Length: 477
Image 1: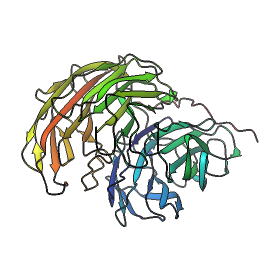
Image 2: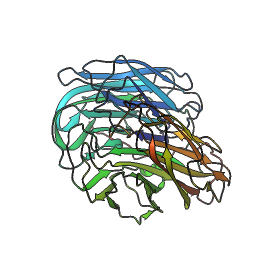
Image 3: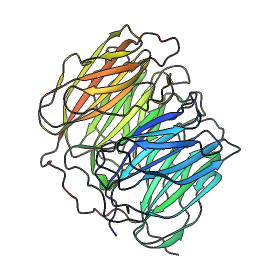
Image 4: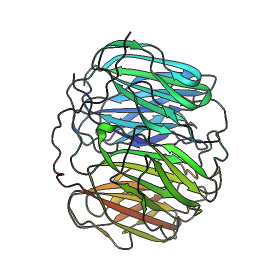
């Protein structure tokens, strides 16, 4: 059976104090025809309140597994669209009512059977540090996804970390809002209990697992510089904590088969409390100049050493809390990177609650080579970024755009996007705001920043890849 060689994922933070009825999530890259998209997540309701799931290419979505904890008002889902059309990227999840504690993450895989891929599934309401979904029986070649979420009370003293089950690889680990996914390819048939271990005991948890049949389908990873994973960590999210202190270590797990060689961390730091960044494995980190307001910057490691157990540590002069020291971190994992090229900032003031600012970089960012990738961040004093467009090429946004002002929740109303820069030319960005904040104050001071990375020598058009052997999950029963 073919092994899935594509596992590109994006992890979003939680909407805790706000209650959206619509959430948008985005794949890291437009899909290839025949790929499979998985969305895992939870809502703060004791029953299934997802009314519709649609995307920008009209694929068919199904709920492969749903598990509810009525007493703790939590329901988790594993959602799927198979054999998707090319260029699928935006998924819209509509709930029957506005619901707090909503969080979704997305993963794209190739080589998943396209018609009836579900082999079996299990789910459970549980507690403790060993979060198991229940026995499943798989066959050789199956691909298993487990998702787990904390739905109990507690107070964090450190960000939560996770240990994958034997043969599994973590994806979308949230250290603050406490939800986690893991996946594994099964080299042989067996009966086993998918399990992930948490560093902090959960008084109540909900988890689900699904085993999928593999078959040759979908596209390959690009041989140009490519984003393989994006992890967003909101240090102020009020799910279960008031303050975590001034040194925060969280996981950024990297699958060895994905060949990541550059890690980029976008720091959104309105109160200017960021001090330093380090990692394990150790890497050499460089920083761009922070923006004139909102104190945003990129910190990056090229020729990076990565690991499935890798961590990043952020040190601050003041601790993020529920209402002070806003700190949002976005981490990009890049493959086939040829190193840093260039960066540009921009800032200003917008005296309207909604509208568009064109060319937000003071000087357009000019790439030196073809086939680069440009990462973009924008933050403002008030209101919400709902559209990011590139003056050349196509900007691929990441905003969840719930139609609500996020304050310090979710992604803090920021504009996030990236562009695959096909040609060596000048790129700028146009940003549109929507007046979601109560009283519709002006956007006020804003800043933007962008950074470009080259494609490594030898990069070129995407070709169909020969499957790379992942570490198999072998159980002897």
